[in-house]
Length: 500
Image (spheres, rainbow, N blue to C red):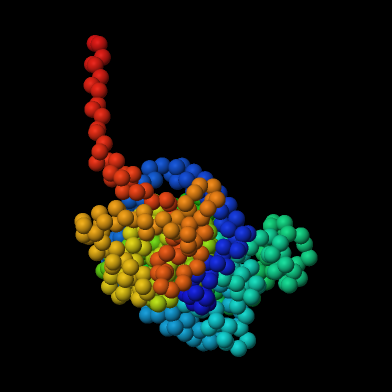
């Protein structure tokens, strides 16, 4: 799949998302439900703001000394007989894993849910090996695979855009004959996937946290499929973003606690696993253990204002409070990382040319920053992306840019600014609704809205006024500044002291 999920322009994706009423309803329902569960789980923990500060400290410390922790982790993996490969980009990572599969003569590959494997386009590489069978074993990812590799719409809930009847039809292609009851379909999926596990010779997982001081991998799941991907196949490959590391088990324990409550509103998920290469005397686990540590643009954030984005623990809480995500869903972002975190991370990983629209897909309400368990200042980073695009690399070459410069000159000159205040009602009155109740509209545009921009009107007018009526502009002697200048403050009345 890769980081970019579609070639469609941003506005086209948004229009498609706006028509998908089921998706919008599902996202809204999930956001509302998660709000209750998440806040309740956090309240049970107690002192949530102090936990956030602790989580931020752990992640900041790790990112600040990332090379040291990665070296310590790699050394400990190799001491236990495992292998570590550092991949500079997606192509290098996917090619290495493909090489491992070929060398091990793997025919049946099972995968647990992993965003970074989707980011590097791993599935496509593995399916290019003749005779290889590949199966996503996370229930949601399994559904997407069987629906012709549909795109996920959420970091934690990938099939949020599908209803039970759609899933029933997908399973019917596999021989399912039951109804659309979720528990019945889940039983079918478990039975179907069990055979894949039994015959698997290569397992691939992601990584929630890598433990630097002992070389172990920490996975947090609810289905148990990741445990089977690790326990049964003789060869295991773990794929992790280079920032997904903590100093020790103590920090992993803290972040697991915060991750579960922020992601799914639980005290702890069903399975919290620590694993590595099979040791002497153990009955299960891989004989060959590989860890692929992926950069793929992450190092570009180090030492910059964007470094805090590497603190992310992929809980998806920012998606669950975002009003933009509520309306356009995951597909509207065109990245496997949707929502506020995707809008910050995607341009860093793959540039503004592909993802320059995403920092503007935000109301800057700061709900994402407020809910983030590790205190990433997401809305500030979105503003910084906008500043860089406008002021440093000048990505806007439209007439809008010139308009903003003219506005800057006007607002910077007291004479021009006062002139605009004096005569502004004359210039804007032709665009506004002249009478209430929409009986008579503006001279040029219906209800003061600009539905289509024709030259030479700037793009700036479209987008703002297509959803808003321009107000009737007051004449100078009626506006607030005139009133305030003539207003006499009312003196406060001193209240008598109460009798003792």
